[in-house]
Picture 1: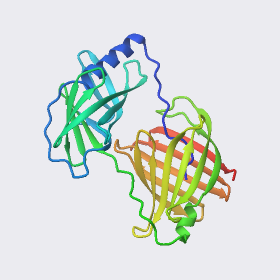
Picture 2: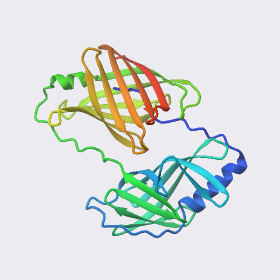
Picture 3: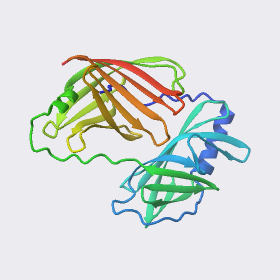
Picture 4: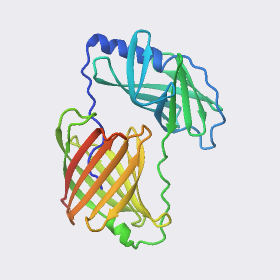
Length: 308
């Protein structure tokens, strides 16, 4: 099990003039304009959840958009709808200078069937529409299309406290000290080494494992759930942080004593995590995110040692 952080350092070095221009573009154009949208009825579970930006004007991310004489590249984004009537939009984009800039804005909303009416803090109004697990906003002619991320899995109580051989492979209960390296890649232009801690606990009568990861600041920044699904006969894993959620399928190599977790992201990138069990108290792991051409967007490697 990977015991490292997955949040990506973001480069924000950009000229004052360009940054101001880009911020105005996002606030006044991409997210806060009045929109028109139509859609089918939303499912009975309602629209709450986290949505991942999939396309802009029909183009998969990263996608180039323009507003007047300003052209930018939208690299990723999420739209979060909370049950308390609030929502937020977060976008990472490339500026003309080549630096990455992250912009997050908050709003309150009201719902009219499949339509969501949003009032943004300190700005105007925006309307969006749902169809199944899709959400769209048409902002001054630019269509932003999102797809709903999987919800937190419903964990049902198991009927036994016994562990199968497959579950025992996942059992890394205890507290761990970890070091990990970000190697040079698209999202991490500079190699960096960090430290942190992790704690793994058996839950739901031992049928699931909950791992909480804390970074150098000592604050919880990542949550992992793992199990062996006897019905599907597969290892399953869910990763959660403040910005996203994902599900991976695992493959155990008994000879190498390693587990490989695989996941294809909504943006087409593939994420592969490999955990190597050196002994009962030592793990080495790696995480690589790359595109279909093999270009690395993130490359991490780490070592975790059980302290108790």
